[in-house]
Length: 279
Picture 1 (cartoon, rainbow, N blue to C red):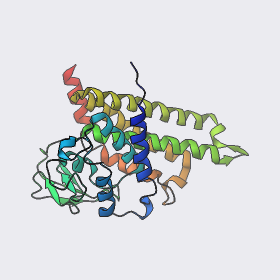
Picture 2 (picture 1 turned 180 degrees about the vertical axis):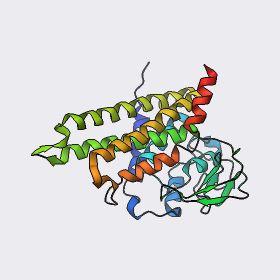
Picture 3 (picture 1 turned 90 degrees about the vertical axis):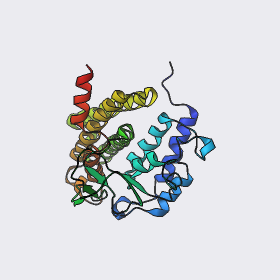
Picture 4 (picture 1 turned 30 degrees about the vertical axis):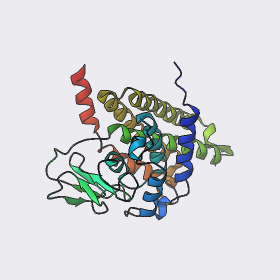
């Protein structure tokens, strides 16, 4: 079996990375959806990727969707991308990016005030002070909201985990102490190696779940990806020292977004219970 990405997969991932790189600056971002960017993503086929060509979509599948959401996570794309993607073909305008869609996810609703369409009952929703300043949240009193998109959130977490690993390695090569790059010191080497292992374990789980389409595989992938995103961001902060908490760095934003995403799609508690019950 060949587990390598095809040329088409590589081109899809590269194209999405180029689209997102430099399109917005995280330190200048707000808790408002960039409508121009949303329509640009729609024009690029981001939201309609899995729709059949007969319905105006790209006609690709879950493995390809995972690749573009990995890039979205790497770039910390702001906005309810998962809900809008899942609404394509159901909510008019979602596939083209003209309509921003959010959905009740358990007891949380991200980007409620910015959405044109909300899927689920948001009666009694109250705003929360989100740990991530770029992801506004509301809580709904009934925690029975439909939980969807676990694998897509896992892909975003994977992209974030990979990004913070790369960022830590780059900083360890540049930053010098005692006349040597800090990456030459064993403690820093170990941190970076552990980050790579976490990211690659999560990658294997996420890609495998995208191929099988199995619900339990998606839960396992989300569990591993959440862990990789949170712990890699923490270790990246450790490598950067106090500099990682400043607005000159994006590292702290990756940690904050990872915390929020860990509560969306499927929490670690839910995933552990479902996986344990299946044993």
